[in-house]
Image (cartoon, rainbow, N blue to C red; front, side, top):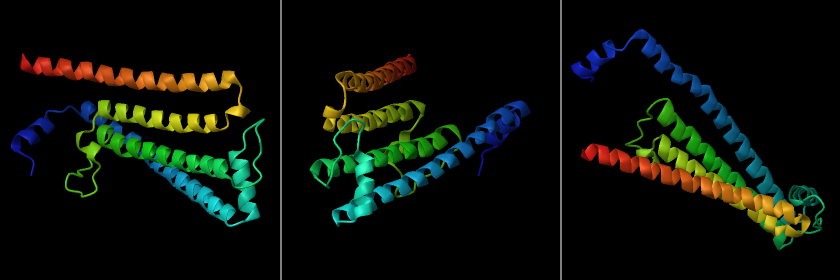
Amino acid sequence: MPSPEHKSSNRNISPISKFIFASRWLQLPLYLGLILAQCVYVFHFWVELVDLVGAAMGNAASMQHIIEAVAVPNGPIPTKLNETTIMLVVLGLIDVVMISNLLIMVIVGGYETFVSRMNLDVHPDQPEWLSHVNASVLKTKLAMAIIGISSIHLLKTFINAGAYTAQTLLAQTGIHVVFLLSALAIAYTDRIMIGTQNQSKQH
């Protein structure tokens, strides 16, 4: 039950402040849209997995779909399900999973941070990171997730390195390094901010 002080503070909030604060609910359709995007990724994952299993069992249509999925421009076209082809398909599946994890962090963490508390403290499946999530923590975790996704794409490129020019390989590696440096910069900035806040509290 709200305390008298809480009720009094609510009465002191001006109507325009309440209206502006209520505008945060405009983000709700965005998070619902991301949930729909998550559904599309789940469907895509199962399509790719079913095709991989079908190709392994000798299904010609599944094998053709797998070849089209892993083929790269100007690169060798696989004619059978070999170790490299399987690896590329599995990396694609891992890529889908990591993007799906990124979506979950944005949906759950973003809603909790910017829209409304979800009150999951007593839920047995509450993510460990959600208990102390804020804009800074969410930003760092998103940066780490993007680095993981970039790593998967870079690995897929290196597996087919012969099909790419040296300029393309250097460009993709450079982009990945930029992601790494960005994440380090974000983490370092957050560390400075936390240290500054702790010093302010001590004084």
